[in-house]
Image (tube, rainbow, N blue to C red):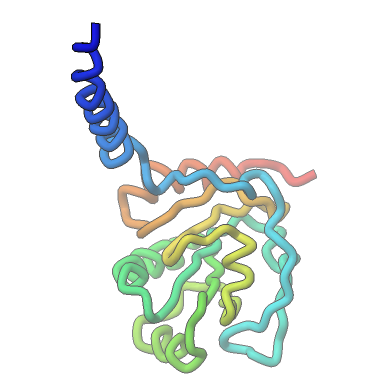
Length: 180
C-alpha cells in the first residue's frame, strides 16, 4: 500500500519537466499579454528628443496608424533592429520612438550616426511612460490605431519575418479601418 509513495517524487519530477518544456519551447515570448490591449495609450506629457522645448502628449499619437517603438542607445537588440526600422520608414510606415531611460546626448548621437526612422521621439528619461505601457525592456513595439488605441504589443526585435508574418497584416488591416 505504501509503495505508491515511492513514485510520488517521480511524478512531481515528470510534471515539472513537462511544465518546463512548455514554458521554454512552446510559448511565444513575443506575445506576452498586455493589460492595455484595446485601450488608449496612457496619458503623458513629455519632451521631444530633438526639440526639447516642445512637449508631446498622447494626442499626438492619434490620426494615423503607427508603430510606437521603445528603444535606447544602451540597448544592443535595438541596434540590431534599427536598420529594419529605417527600411520600414522609407516604405512609409509611421514610427514614433520612445527613447527609454537614455542619456539625451547618447540618443542624439545614435540617431545622427545610424539615421533617424522616427516621425519624432518621446523622451522617457525616468521610464514612467514605459512603466505605464507595461514595458519589460527594449526593444518593444506597440501597434497604435488611428484613435490612439493600442492594438498589439510585440516584445523583441522587429525583423523581416516579424514584420511580414505578424505586424504588417495587422498594420494594413488598421489602415483600412474607418475612424468614426
